[in-house]
Image: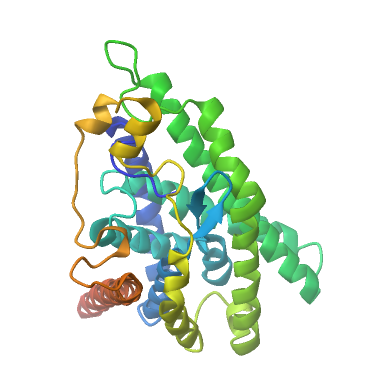
Length: 329
């Protein structure tokens, strides 16, 4: 679901990025006003959880791969605005350092996974949990909300792909960017998400939700304080287990490089061929200077987690300065 650069037109990326600007602004104001700076680290921990979770690739129908995101779960645990910030930072680190999702396409990926998914998951969960207060229904609600949110995110992504050949063509009538029309992009995205990825997302969500409810039950009922200290050990274990994500071979649908597209279509759309190419330091979570793929994957997970926590530490410091300035005035 991570859209690479040059799959969407620059104008599409610009529109989606501009759309995200007021959402990010609102999220930062909500977090600052509701949480203060003392719980920013907890939001950073949730962001790190999503980052590591997305490294566990699973095989999907058609020979592609996918992964859970945790977007709906984070929305349920901490609230949709907090989830928006957590997911956005995770996606930014993925794009800049690991080439997972494009830099130009960051706004589009944030719209799909940091806005659509956590907000949809949260509000679906709020509606569903109102039907019953039983623990079993609570887990069912989490599963349904997570399942529907990732499928909604996949549908929006598929539409963004499918609109490209309709709106952007070269002088010969060939697609400039993503070459897959809606009648291909929607089934290609939705079938694996409906039958596999959505179920994995739902199961992962109820597993983590059950654990957190057991060790820190106040998180579920009080969004003002998401204290996640027991969750740190879970993330550490996930980092150590990330090589499991290497078992699934293949690439996620719509994330192929130019060589693969050329083999499939016999040509590469000119907008993709001549577009920007940002070379990340550790593409595909590999460290070229480390011969062991598994070790490189684990170290990439650890580095990504560390970078995310550093970013949230900086955010916490800036918020503290704002508070101090306000008091001085």
